[in-house]
Image (tube, rainbow, N blue to C red; front, side, top):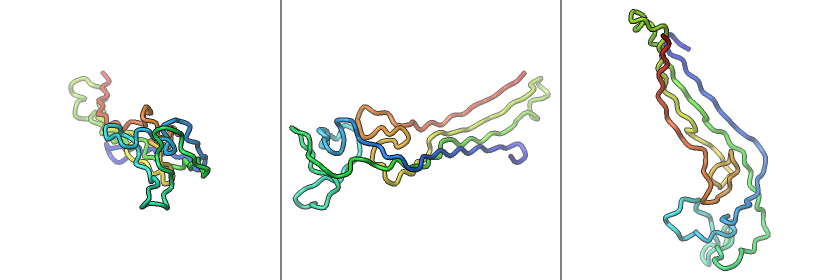
Length: 146
């Protein structure tokens, strides 16, 4: 707090904890790899010119055979919430208002997840197209007490 301003910053994190990709739409079997109308990660697939890729080529008929590590580190740190509040009470006391606060806040502004390739490390959702990651929201609030 400083004068009539107050600031809240909330960080959320998980360190460690591996998660397995369980969905059928994983880097190991992505039947939607060439669909531009779906929002999902771009994977480093094997091609004849990219033989050092992390994932085998997508298979549209059979599951891709891959014996490597299918677990990924979920470690992340997220700016979960930031809120700026301004106390306007002094300006409105003469109108019979006991308290007036104006707040601007935002949720899920930024996430750093260096090893997770799915949509959201906090939910460990993997890379399914039907998964909804944590939504970024911005809100403006007005608190009035009479």
